[in-house]
Amino acid sequence: MPKNRRSFFKKTAMASVAGVAAIPTLVQAQGMTNWLCVVVDTVDELSSDLHSASDTVVVKDVDRGGIFVYDVTQAEINNGGTVFNGWVRQYDGAIDAEWFGIRQDKEDNSPEFALLSQAIDNGDTVELKHIYKCNNKSISLQNVENITVMGNGGILSSLREYVMRFHDCKNITVKDISISTVFDNVWHDRDENDKQYFNVGGIIFYGCHNSSVSNIKMSQVPGTGICAWNGFDTSVENSYFENMGGNCFSSTETNDGDKPPVSRGFKFHNNIVKGCYDSFVGTHTTEDISIVGNLLYKVGTNPKHQVNTGYGLDIPGGSNCTITGNTIIGNNRYNSSGGIAIHVHNYLGVTAKNVTITGNTFKEVNGVFVREQASLVTISHNTFDHCKTAIKVSDVTMLDIANNTILGGEKGIDAWAGNVMKRITIHFNHIYNTSTSSIEIGPHVEETVLSNNITRGAKNQISHEGDPKLIANIFETA
Image (cartoon, rainbow, N blue to C red; front, side):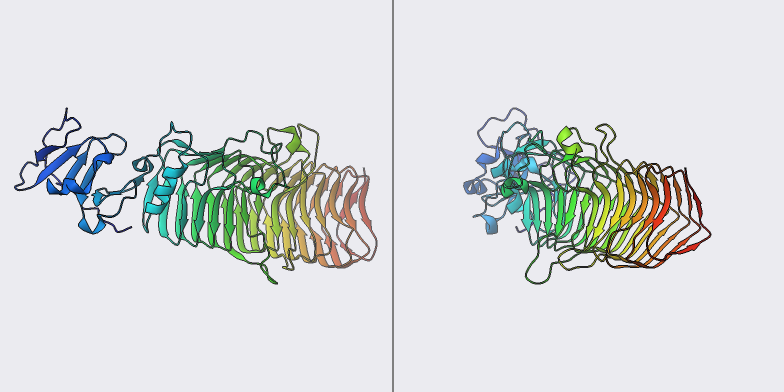
């Protein structure tokens, strides 16, 4: 959309227009000569024939009003919000969504959001002042840059697709809004055979560069909250998610031909998630991942969710990944330790590698599971509090488990299963009061070193077949 945001009569006083009826009124601006201003009640009165009276119109409507200047080159344009038959709205700053007829008391603002989306151009900021109902996609953009969506409002949706969509865009910011759906029970209502319903999600970035989501609240979304498919540098920070039916934040998960697509630059920092059916984060075939400082609860408000055995942080085929400073809390209320806090594994032929898991706290979940030829994984300086199995590995290469504290639960470190197990080091770990075993080393583990570990209180402190190298460990049975 061509831009024309001239300031109108800056630093001059307008004559009073109070009490003007529907009949257009002519007002001369103070200090100006040969300039007349037409005053009308609503934007519906902005027609091209008004230009014969003046090139400037004031619309009094509280929600959609403003100052409009006539531009003959846009005489055939009416986008429903900023241009009406050549009359171009004069404004600085954000586009108010309500200029397009969007209202908080409407049952469905889908047509008006479609008009708004068509009017958004490079560099625009869009403001959502209230919570608006929408039965279809709200803001949907393609091939635009430097867009911000913000405000004190948001979207309440009942649609069966994504609430907000950005396709092949650059430098997109969504902040300070809320997104929710009318589906109260996202676990009970979720039908994995109904793909249209299953894909109901919050925000999708497809093929986008430099996408940022911050300070938002998202709740009761049956599918994935935020998707970053085939994209680069997507971040979600300082946001709150509650009762999500799918992943909160997910990257590419579809295979395109012989090679899976890869997303790069994936950041999930300082968020709170309470209740998630599937995973908090799913980083399918993603490179350069940072998951830092999040508080993640597997506890939701629905008992059906509590027996779910999904993953907390899923790293399928992810590489160059740092997971640090997170707290992941499972479920004690329903007496279940189901689910895996962090799952590192291969995906569609892509190897998970260069993964560092450090400084995290796990409580009442299965802790960290590493499988399927994943390589170059470090698990260090974490605390596992009454986790069913704290650390489990199988078919891995070059794995380092160091300086972890494991308190209670059933098993400490389980490296028993798997046919390809090479170069595993387990050192300086403290494992206390696990009910079944502290450390298990299976027959296929090669080049394994256990050094300076302290285990106390388990029935079996160490079980092994094969020939692990044991150096300066303290094994004390119950």
